[in-house]
Image (cartoon, rainbow, N blue to C red; front, side, top):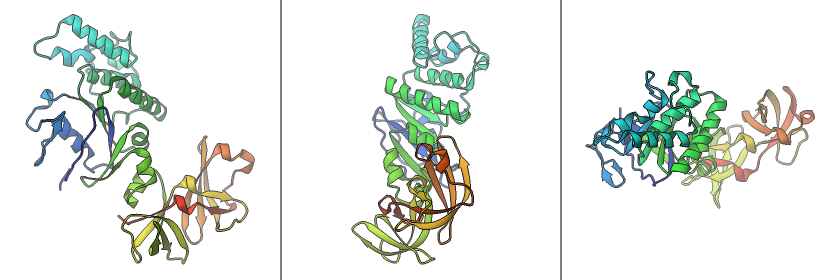
Length: 345
């Protein structure tokens, strides 16, 4: 089995790029080749224009932050951060190491924690120490291997903002590996969606979310409802999809689709509108399930011809006295211009 196949990618200086995909898709292998922990069987890895295939990891202008942080428990914060600086040859003066460590602590907002033992710190603070240890060496490329996976949801969101601020402040190129679509969407300038060792689509977060090229990308980048069928005709970039139940639905056509092709219509949950009264073009359904999540409510609507559809309603647009209840009959519709007719995987 090939772990990474035909990867051809350029990363711009100062860019925040993410490899996104499920376990086993090749994203970590791609990261390890940049770090020097894996060697490509063919092709070249270049960093700042220099071929680094034969250069050991310690000789590359790269630092890596691991999921486990890999901090030294017997060292305090300052010693952990300065470890790499102490390994340099020729040796740096102690005063210079202290200055660089102090600057790194300032950047990650941990000034005053120099003497603290890492095991006395919270998960978020340990993550900042790991980041400080990585940036103190002033690498040209910082690699992040799912660094937020061990944090709880609230802290993970806070650290996402801090990572963005940090990257903009120091201007180092960041490459992140993650299976968390929300993390990739919120952090990245550009995302590479991977599958079976290959990059299948690259783009900025909004472009990937709004214009996926396949069902796989639409399903992995965000959440979507998929309705299978066959293309009846395509005209002016709009495809008409005939479903097995006899419904005809329209959406923006995926490139290359033609009449007779098997395809699916993709519509995001937030694009579906629910009403108590029938409207032109609406479809009847029943609320099968309701999950209140604070800022929005998620509904599962059972539609006789289409099956189960996820619907997301923001709370600001749905006062408590107007929210829908489980078992309630409803009517749903969406703007065909916001739906996509995609090629099957």
